Length: 89
Image (tube, rainbow, N blue to C red):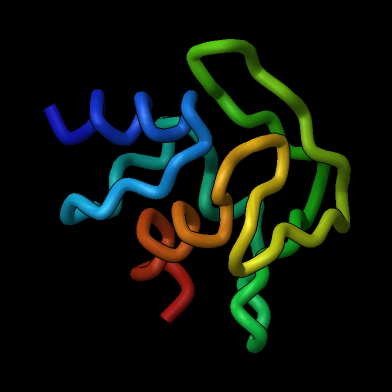
């Protein structure tokens, strides 16, 4: 059920405040494709495919995703921090 809530939030570009737990690498993104910066932003290490209900956009290599705000209508900073937190601590 939590996965469905996360997918719905992704599609709407909203930050879900439900308790988010890290999910399997084969989910909407691969944590290994992103690097966390000290300012809270995330950078793509390579061209990265994002699996979303409305389509699968590709984010170019070396793209910085802000810690706050949206990119492609999605709050990637918040979502990556919650999904990939154990991989980047």
